[in-house]
Length: 216
Ligand code: DX5
Ligand code: ZN
Image (cartoon, rainbow, N blue to C red; front, side):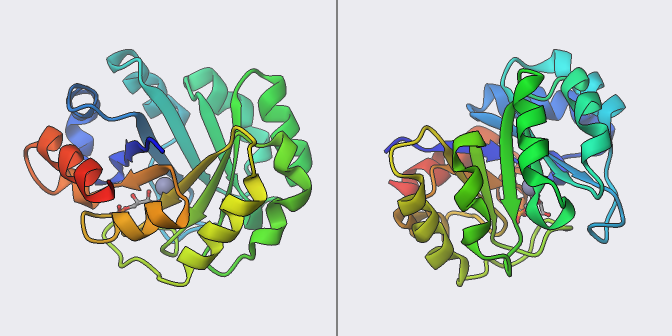
């Protein structure tokens, strides 16, 4: 199974965001993971559609937008207009997941659903055919640089079985680094988000290469 690496620009230098996005593109990333936080659903604030729109011209890579906001529904069109390719909402932040997923696809974008560490995998069961991506949070969302929560490995393998042969990305976000990536991929993940692991060093291509090698 070939894996995709999605560096999270949460750990990038925000003063040089365009340059940072060009650097991870040149370093061979697959997706650009964009963490949107509202200071309400999660205890941290990042940025919204205007910033995403500004970095859009810097790369043609997939913009994988992880919305940690509540409510998300009123803003989905804004994120699509800003240049998102994949829009992921949180199961815990939306009482109408089915409607939001349908809406995201209706505006021509890929639809993702994210699960906090305590959220059971059963939440995806009745919307599997409306999903392009499932995001298992392996830390409590809000900050980069936290430790991987081991209990999520079981959830990842259960979701892998539920996906069957559907064309759904199984993404894992939080605490993924050269030490943890193999267990995550072995459990069934195929899209790996890495924030601090990629941006901590200066040579992004080397780090992305190390992650791919460690996962193999
Ligand atoms: C956390 C974010 C992650 C974060 C991961 O709420 O969703 O994408 O950037 O950071 P690391 O890879 O450092 O755990
Ligand atoms: Zn994220």
